[in-house]
Image (cartoon, rainbow, N blue to C red):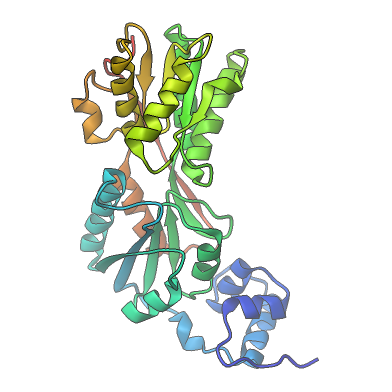
Length: 331
């Protein structure tokens, strides 16, 4: 049966017509290695019948313009030094490769594809959390795309070792004698935060410490750092048996947690330990200085650019190592 042509078919339309996944369709259209010849022919035939504009693929074209994009409903560069430092790594890599770099933001009400075409970008580096619908739109762009601090099974991704780092940080607390270790969590939709919570739980399991669900709380309201963290810490300290250590999903939350503890008359680390994750500059200057898990933030940005340049034939997942930095917020 003939395929009815559309005026502006997308890669998703081609995938549906050919009966294959979006990732396979993209690799077939871009003539990547590792795609069966018959499958490639089927995808190209579906694209031709739909009237797809193959110039959208920019096949063989080197990356001259790269766009760093984040979703401002989840993050802002102004108040999030984590992503600002990632941007520094991207900038260094682009300068080395003579790639022009622009950065922009979007939200769920805007079209990422229109923004990408308007800037005539050759590649897209998506940093931080994005909605599922946005990721679907991104996969249809037909240009090299990599995700940083986010995961998708059919896309190139660069992430810190969030699971392993959280496991090691929890294990560190256990070896220092802490047993009631609480976890203050961020948005469940964010990949890195979910990985950290799983690493925390796995460390408890492997060290035969029973998981107490009352020791896991969320920073609510999630976008209000001071108010949300204060509420979470008070919830933990009001337990009949309060925690002896608090693992916070990031440094900003940990630093505010320390302030709340002092407000309530508890000393850190004498009465309760507090640890964070990320190793932001403020972790060194907080009082007391914060024990945390260091992330190579600039390395995340550099590896993202390297993935875009390499254009691997199959979706590639890159994990950047982390390491513990011990300071005075723990015994």
